[in-house]
Amino acid sequence: MREKVILVCTKCLSRNYTVTKKQGDDKRIEVMKYCPHCNCRTLHKETR
Ligand SMILES: [Zn+2]
Image (cartoon, rainbow, N blue to C red; front, top):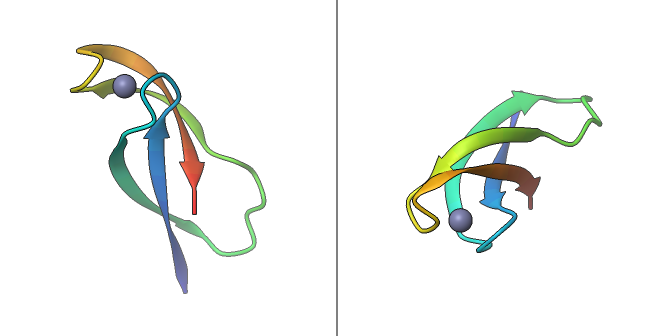
């Protein structure tokens, strides 16, 4: 089973991406991704 998580921009808090991660992985995902609201690459973190 895979767990679906949402990635939110840490600047404007908009939910831009959904990703799936392996179950049992406790690490919080933090990735640099493009945000259409900020119009640049920002840090996105997983939320639930
Ligand atoms: Zn943003």
